[in-house]
Image 1 (spheres, rainbow, N blue to C red):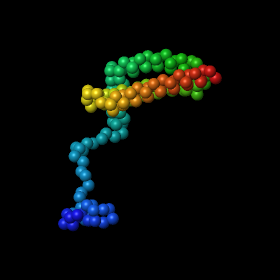
Image 2: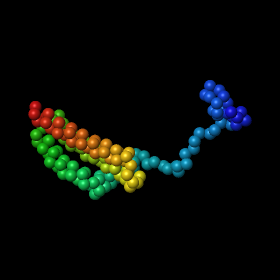
Image 3: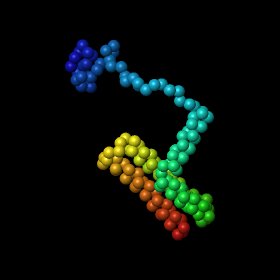
Image 4: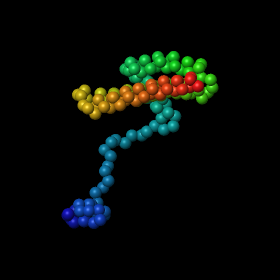
Length: 151
């Protein structure tokens, strides 16, 4: 404990810094300040980022292309086979969920690959968990179609 440095042995324990002129200032961000777009510009930037993400997934991910091809079959079939709006939504929704989960899985895989090429158990687990999420989405698609069409 150093009283000259503003440390006290109060209720917070020894070595804490006292408030006052010798207090430690809060952490200062070293990141450069930037002006974030607002309004329509922000909306346009978000749309362009999303479009670039879809283009990148189409270009780089064979699984995404395969799932889009499946969606070209499943979505029209769901629209045709659904007896009402709720059934149509139930038949189409899981297919769209598969595409969303595949995009997230691809993002996780890209981030892991960016970190490094060496094998690490946590990197493998992350990729396996993303793959499992896509698999569960497919199970949801199958179960939903089975339950809606069997009714």
